[in-house]
Image (cartoon, rainbow, N blue to C red):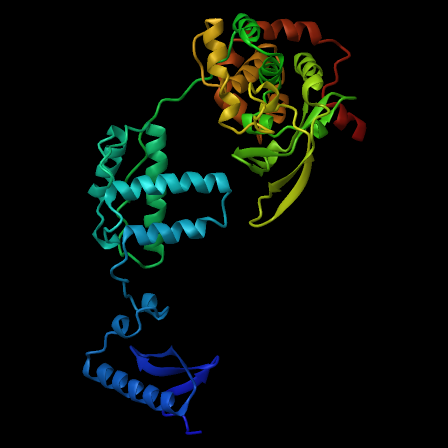
Length: 425
């Protein structure tokens, strides 16, 4: 076999060339097998490269458009569109976020790309384009290729869309696809803080009376008196219920139809001490589902590709209340709230979103003087700070009763420090 021409070498089963450019030795793989003919052609290519460098006509990006060396040489890849970059960014995000979050990202990215144009070059996108896209998303003036216009989106939703777009552009900037960041200086739109809107005790009683079946009444009674998130409620199984101590272990959530995951945060994996009303709801529900079919459920874990299998006899099942008997074996996040609006309407109660069942639990607990840290642990919050931030108003309403609690409980026998610290001494 012939010798290697100057500047041609064997590497990893193929040929590559090396040459000096801007004071540094550059190596580029040609991706061709090591044969005498290819060696000769590689030598000729290397000679032409050296001549172009010497005469000042060499264009590195044109000769080796996929070279990782381009970025260090200050080249900016040309011809990359917003559609191409959003696809690349989404694919990389797939491995670090939950499936439900990824589905949201897909919707947000599609909205942003539709507002600006998938064929727009990244290098052509300006700050003004992003502001115009935000305006069209807010007002619903955005038009799609099929000719229909979307209705205006909420401030919260638009902020999520633009945050996604900004992340894509930041990724492009960090990796050398663009040399300036068009989203720089764009801040989120101001949005009003949504205060909790809990049911009153009277509204609660009316709502329970308005339930058309016992299983539906049990579901909403348990939801209000346990504070579980609706995805956790839908995924709750009898295997999670300790009927001796009356606790519920929350270890799974359902975020998409048929897709089970861990709870929202690590703090969401918890043991909930059940109230008397929640216990009564479970006792009533036993008649309907306790001896039901057990299902093998795959639960996706936080690490990409990892999962576990749980055996679940679901506490709440739409099959029980289905008129035609073909309801699902468990509720999906969307369907679990399907009966909520009808209950409020029949009871003559002002409409609220179904999530207010969770807020009702927190507000009632605070109004009763329950320790915020205990409430936080029961609801799956990382700390009591979330309770202070969201439900502070209900804590202030309780101030009038605090002195009576202090006067009732203060005595000479009260320890000056927690019991666990006293026992260590």
